Length: 437
Image (cartoon, rainbow, N blue to C red):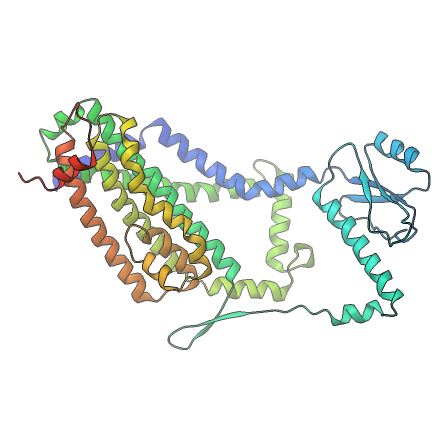
């Protein structure tokens, strides 16, 4: 055990002192903070100049119907198409031309400009024209448009989950789907990223013949376990630093350390959302509904499960990656063995759309129990509410799967780590697994 601890310490300290670790630890939070603040910053850039649209309406139906919107200004012209188009384009404005139809209502229009209009400009113009034309058609048939407006009804469908004790809790499918995808893909990303580090480290030590010196002092199994656990601790350290530094960077920007104007905009938008003011697009009832939805998600179970499945999935796959790294002589030779090992993870990501649609189906339940797919599938099911016994069973099977894959990996590792100059095949790996000392 002492030797394993020494290897863990060596792997951990060696990796956290590398420049690449320090750079990625700092760059990761910057990118995360940028993803949070970029929409606000880009919105400020996009809102710097208003789009001006000249309206040339030959029908007369839409005169003064287009009202100025946020960063969209309309003005009306009366000349001929050629001259008005030249004037508008000379000023970098757009020209909305609505021709007079011969036999039908005006459903066609042309928007001229030196550049592409924003989607909001196109959507607003189409919306106004659609409403005006529909109103005219209804009135022509003797139907009051106000009656149609009164008939239209918004349906508010609230989903309520009832647990085994009969307690009711509001939920929101959209929020749960977002959390499920986020958790599943983060597990997928971290397993591959840190598992590949184990394989690369083993392969480099073997190719450099350093492992021959190490094996003289420790057993191959101890070396493999020390590497796996050491890299796992490096991954957890980096992950926790990412979370802490992301909050620090976001808080620094909000406090105006980088740009006071942008921070004030971000803070005002955040305040509008939390207070439920109309400017934030969220009234008190909507904010209360969001709070109910968030309260309905068991974040304690999600966080604990994420850490467990991250570690369990990483330990399971990294043992196989370590075996691959120990079996081959060169990094390029790992590709033929990587595909079979990676297929369960890839299949889990592909099957995620089915799991999201039917989280309680037999397929989803079984996929969340199989150790090779459970780290991703179960994390995608948990936001929807999973019985505790299923989570416990999945935990147990994942631990058993890790023990089994570690046993297989150790068999391959102890032989392959000192094997040089021989092209390894699947048949050869099978012999190594059942080789007896």
